[in-house]
Image (cartoon, rainbow, N blue to C red; front, side):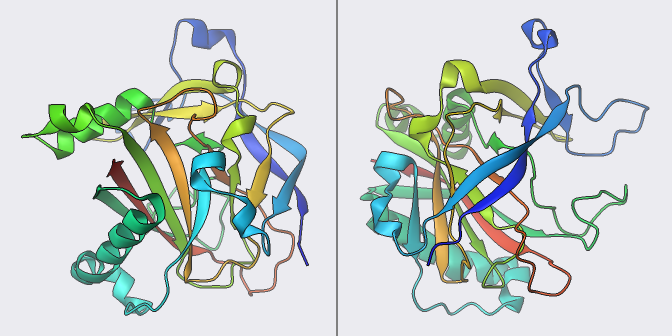
Length: 281
């Protein structure tokens, strides 16, 4: 039985400011009294999110921009995810092999692994510095095509031009550390329902030592959102973020979190791990 939900998302607001200024958000606390962002995000209510549980095979990475990857037996314990050496030795190898098999890739290059554990007050910020990064609750995509090209160059000093001449993709692999997920599950948008000329705005995520160009998203009525109800720790959501062969039906996918009304796990703390990878064909 599917569990479709009606919920709310936060989107970037359309603004004439973007004609001469780029949206940004600081990923650190500035020393001076400097605005952490320069744009407004608005809540959009009444968004229907369809459950794909039981019909996962109807959706594919190539067609829709997302897929479910079964991880099978894992040698990782919950506490292992706080040990970067164990993550590198076991989990990242498992993800790389899984992506090669799922996508038919000749090479998978993982460049980032991120743990998120929601604070008990999330999504209300306390102003303090958290031990773990918090879930992202703004509809977004991780990288523009230009940012992805730059990432290929950063990760491959010697053979970047050769790799850039092939087809490559930026892929995000997300899974919960504790399941089944009943609070703040991840929702994705079918890439066929995204109009890049209408729905997307370039945005700078500003870190202390680097600026990453991402996409923020405007709401449009035609966007179709999905999630996997009661997602377990051996089910990973694989999401396309950028594709060097971008064209009709081959655009990036944006993703967000949303508040699940079915709160059954106490305080509703959500813990996850996401892996960012470059995939070459």
